[in-house]
Image (tube, rainbow, N blue to C red; front, side, top):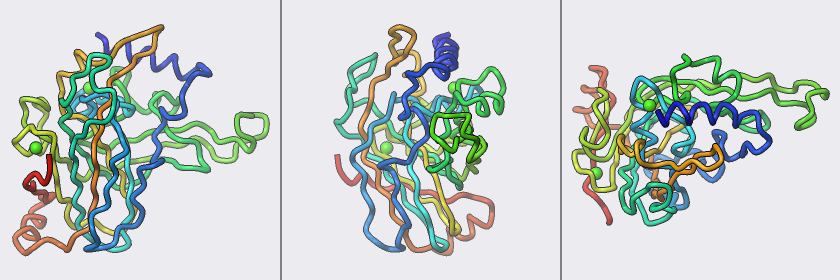
Length: 280
Ligand SMILES: [Ca+2]
Ligand SMILES: [Ca+2]
């Protein structure tokens, strides 16, 4: 029931001046640029996730709220495989708003495509286009196991002034699902089919996404603790607040997979493998 209330709250929040720009899909501070094949991993240690359930909650039939995690981007100039690794850290509020210190089990979903970026307005779940694009029983537009889309608002010639005319019309940005990896097992991330758990719920997960063609990619990092949605989140004056959890995110373009993996790809398998935990 709380999720329904959250949806109602977010709906009305869209029409208040208090709407925070940070609530929109942004890559600010989360753009890995064009990856260089075989270069050292690029590491981002500055980001926190809002809640520990954002990935898992978006695997179910009610979809999920894109605010409950972070979006990153990278570009490939040519075909490559990309390793994405996640390690929880001690940053964030963690124990506030129903959260538990050290409980984050990170997960990532990779998509081709990009959200709307400046100079266009940024996308968000509560835009008119986003709301119109999804069935009414959803918590938001985010799907971590499927293609999805997110809409923005009109961008005016003069910011905030509709009378200045529309410079860029509102549109849906489309994300084409490629694959996922998640920390742990169905005991934490739930029973949706298609989740690639690493079998050990220890705060670390790594996956290789193989044979990615040149282009722009978006990946969502969120928590894989499905049941945390029942305990995290505290409402105050109609606004929910969530605990935040820090996560180290690394990205590396690596040589194309070996023959066995290419055979698997030929069978329609999106290659991924787990790596031994590299640090604690
Ligand atoms: Ca859900
Ligand atoms: Ca793990």
